[in-house]
Structures are given as structure tokens and as C-alpha cells.
Image 1 (cartoon, one colour):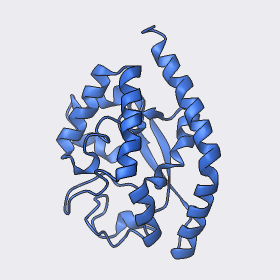
Image 2 (spheres, rainbow, N blue to C red):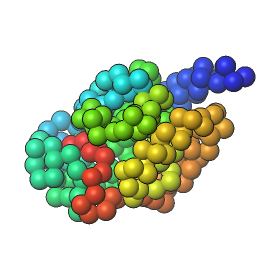
Image 3 (tube, rainbow, N blue to C red):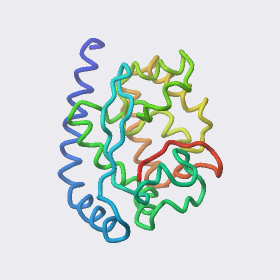
Length: 204
């Protein structure tokens, strides 16, 4: 059973992502149109991220910030009440709807439903050799750190949780994370980072 677990995880990813996309497509279309109407730029934000074993892939999100946000203000950091985030973007972030296009990344095999969050390529040089072990797992839309504090956690703690996930992965753990993610989204737990904290740059 243990040797079959990775294959069962992939099958579950495909089934959940395909079903999710069929439901989410109308929502993404409406959200994308709202983003375009409010500010300049396309509805989708594409970002280069680090995947399993350090492979670089393109991650997709619904745009939540003004065009060119990386070159404005805090750069890759997200501040409390960040003025670069649009009104539509705040709603998308609060509900995590901006993450829906990543279901396509899951179908492509770039990501899993559950795993360490894929971070920008630039972050690699900041990690210790131990922290880089997070790349031994397929990155996920949600993960152990996301259901245990998300952006409210300090960076070292988040990365340590990612490594813990790598060392303790099981289908049972993934199922628990999936259920806890639903609860976190419904309660909006841990969505906003503290002012001045270097949080994950979640796209334009």
C-alpha cells in the first residue's frame, strides 16, 4: 500500500482538480472580468515558482494587485492594507478564490492539491540546506503550514513545517490537511500577514 500511495495521491489530484475546474470556471470568468474592469492588466497573473526537486514552473493565479506591483512599494513583500491590492483583489484573497487557476497547474502535473506552497525562484538563496528539503515534495495549493497559521507564521516556522510534511507525508495526513483547508477558508483563518512581515508574494 505504501508503494502505491504516491500513485493514489496523483489520481486523487487529477479527480479533484478536474471536478474543481468544472465548478470553478464560471467563477474564474466572472472574477477575471471584474479584475479587468477595475484596473489595467489581464485577469491571470503568471509567476515562476520552484517545484519538486527545484524544477521551475509557471504558476497561475487570478490577478489581485495592480499591474507591475513587484516594482512598486514593498516589492515582493505584502504589507498590511497594501494599497497595491485592488478592491476585487481583496475579495479574491479573503476567499482564496485567487488560487483557483492553480487547479490547472495540478492537472498539468506541476503541483499537487496538498504540499508545501511553491515560492518564487528568488527565495531559494535565502534557505538553509535543511529548508531546501521542502523541494523534495510536489508543491501544493494548500499544505501543513497553511492550515496551521498560514501568513500569520514567521518564515522559519513555515519552512520548518514544510520539511516536517516531507518527512511525515501520508495519504491520511493529506486528507486531514484537505479537510482543515476547507475549514480555514470558511473561517478566513490566517489570511492576512502582519504589517511589515515578508509574506509570500501572491501575484498581481
